[in-house]
Amino acid sequence: MSSGDNICRVCGSQNCAECVVFPYGASRGAVCIACALELGGVQRQHSKQPKLSRRAIRKRIAAQQAEQPVASDNDQELALPEIIEWLDDADEGSDLPGGWKQSYP
Image (cartoon, rainbow, N blue to C red):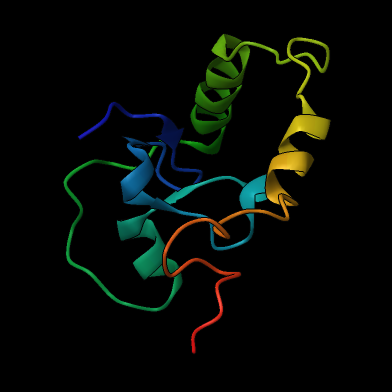
C-alpha cells in the first residue's frame, strides 16, 4: 500500500492511487471510493471521518500541488530515431526458428 498521494475533492481525505477515482476526468480532481459511491447514488451510514469544509479542502490541494516538483520540458531528450529504428526493424525474427518472416513448408 502506498502513501496518500491524492486528496479527495469531496471529503478532503488523503488516499493512495488505488483508492481514488476520477469520475469527471483528471483535471477535476480525485474522489475517494466512498464519496464516488455517494455521488453515484449509493446511500451509506455515518462515515468514519467528518467532512472538511470546502476551504480546507482547497488549502490541502493547493499545498499538495505546491510540494510537487515542476517538470520542465528540457530535462531529458528522448532518442526517438533509435526507438523508431528498433520498432521498424525489418529483420526482426527472420533468423529465429518460428520467427515472423519464416515460411513453413
